[in-house]
Image 1 (cartoon, one colour):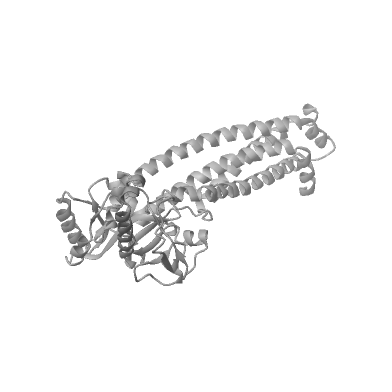
Image 2 (spheres, helix red, strand yellow):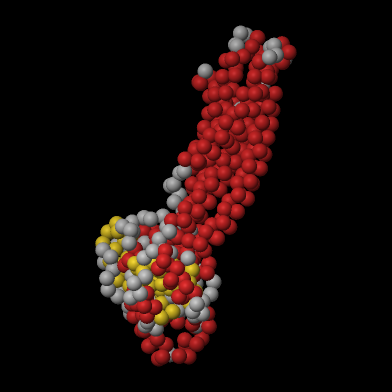
Length: 406
C-alpha cells in the first residue's frame, strides 16, 4: 500500500505541494511566535533575578535596566565610583558591582566592571581578568572574530563602529566565556579601571588636538563619555543582604535627586508585560492563520478527492474496499503532513538563525537550536488539522456506492 501510495502521490504532486506549503507557512509562523516570545521572556526573568537594586544617574528606569542588564541602549550618564565604596562599607550589601560602558570592539560593547559580575558564568578557556587592559570575551564575540586567550583586541570610542581606535592600549584576551544564551555572549568584559586608562589616554590626545576633537565629537558623545575621567562609572549593581537592607537602601538613595534607584525585577516585569501583550496579539494572528489554513487545506483536499472520484469509483468496482482507499489517501496525507512538519521546524529555526545577529544588537539573544516541548505540540495540532479534512471526506464517500460516483 505504501509503494502504491507513493506512486499515486507522484501523479498528484502539484496539489500535494500546495497543501504542504500551506501547512509549512502556518506551522512556521506559530513556531516562531512561540519560540521567540518564550526565549525573550525567559531571558528577561533570568536576568532580572540576579540583582535587587541598580543605582545610576537620574533618568529613565527602563533605559537604566536595559543598559545594565542587556548591555543595550546608551548609559544615562555617570556617577562617582566612590558610591561603590560607600555601599560596600554600609553593611547593607553582599555585592556592589561597578558598571561602565561606552566603548566597543567591532560593535560589541566593552563593559567595565568587576569579576563578580561574571560569577556563575563558566569559562571555556583561559582565566578571569585581574588587571587593567585584560578582558574576558563573550562566546558569540569570540566565535565571530576567532578570538583566543593571548590575542589582543583594539577597542574604539563609542558604542558603534567607526569611532576613534584606542590603538595604543589594546586589550589582552585572558578568557572566553562559555555559551550562556544571554546578552553576555555578545559583550567584552574588562576591569572598570581599563575604561579610565583608555580615556585618560584619549583626553591627553584631545588636549593635543582640540580643534579636531570639536569637529568629530558632538554633545551627545560628550555626555556618553563623561566617565572617561577616573573615578566615574555609569551604574552600580547591588545585591542587598536582605529585605530590611533593601528597604533601607531604597529609602536612602531614592531621596537623592542625583541618583536613580530601581528594582530591576520590577522594571523588567513591566517590559515583560508589554512582551506578553505582543505575544498574545501574535498568538491571535496565528489562530486566524490556522483557521484560514484549515479552510485552504480542506478546499484543496476536497477538490483533489472530487477530481479523483471516478478513480475511486473504478477502484471500488474492481473490488478494492473503501477501507483500502481510505488508507491510501490517509497514507498520502500523513506523508505530506510529516514532510510539512519537518520543513516547518527546519524553516522556523533557520529564521531564528537569520535574525539572531540582528536582535542581538537589541540585547536579545536567541538560541536557534532550542526546541521547546510546546513546539512539538503545535506541530502535532497543525498535522492533525491538515489530515482531518481528507479523513472526513473519504468517510463520507464510503457511504456511496461505486456507480454513483462515476
